[in-house]
Length: 362
Picture (cartoon, rainbow, N blue to C red):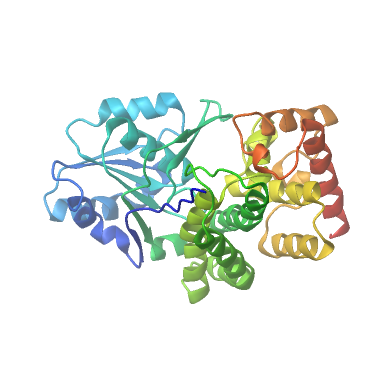
């Protein structure tokens, strides 16, 4: 049996990492850095982003992210990169996925710099591509993980707390999807089976979230960096990233992808929808009550959705939920990694039941 564990070339988590960005770029290239930056981050931190490049007289080009990780956005950046030989992404998940895709198509090294611990995307060899109007289109598997992932803990602690909470939702799914993939002996996105190390990382991710998640949320509400925040940044980003990629995705993320078919969910973050997908996965698996109590209790404590209203579809019809199920169960998604067959009707029912269970915990 072939088992594979993959990871970024280097993972750096430190205070004020923006100040060493040019130095990190110079370890990977010499002609200059093409920076794809979230517009809000550019407005807020532009001077800090470019300071190290200007101090070192290193060529750089800042281009603002257009808002959606779509093929048209990826191609736009390819056409603008010029002579730069390092691609840098600074922002949230879609900015970073776009950056990874651009670097892949141009065969250039890439540095990923999240500005919030909002998802497990930064460390992965994967970009999630959407249509221009925000509907899930396809997964883009990449031949390697990012050359470098850099986490500026001061910047992340100052980000809106909703992003950290979203990251908790994305990361919480990691262990339970890993368990499903282990039971089904699934082939992960690495092209092999899960290693024991990947499963251990997924479990560690879960344990840190439950222990430190509420404390980290309390700190970030006030922009304060604590030990709990540092632990959660690592869990949301590194542990969840290694865990999901090398252990596998299952129902929670497939249901997230299906939920993008409903316009009401578009204003909600990736991890918020994954969190609700995890609750639906629990219904599909008929998990014991202690697991339901932990998940619903944790989600309510940190501010993750436990009802359909929490992801913008309180009025979803049965036909709407069936549309979600049909997309979630498509052969291009990860529902097939569940250890039993799941139909669109099963998904629609699980979404409804998860909502009803949520009402009983209010």
